[in-house]
Length: 187
Image (cartoon, rainbow, N blue to C red; front, side, top):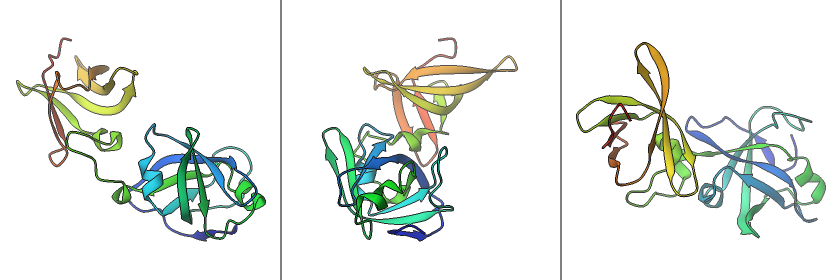
């Protein structure tokens, strides 16, 4: 196993949050490409779980745990250091590794704020009780976020999109795994 890594099991609630891009400096720091514009999960968690790069050289195998000593924003990107990753060579060996963080270690969302990962899979129902589909992904259009869902209509699977804005979203019930919307099936 590489310096700083220890064999581990991926937590059941693990979420992929980014990947290690490259070494940063000569003291073992590395640059991270987060999958979120607001990478709070990377900053708040002190245990990252790594899987090898999907492409290219594999410098380790299986699941590894990395003890993070510091993660911070630096010029619009994330840089981090880890225990026992003390030089550039050790940091370069992590290049391409996929980073997972336990969902339970994410910071608590504010009222009326949601992590996208928590919305995926929720059923979307309108005020009249008509099922509009199940959220499969979210898109950021710059101005707003859009729910993208699969729905069945006339025996076909179709894609439906609804802006995730308060004028259309009445309620998000994570416990019931349901989003109530002011939207008609023929939109």
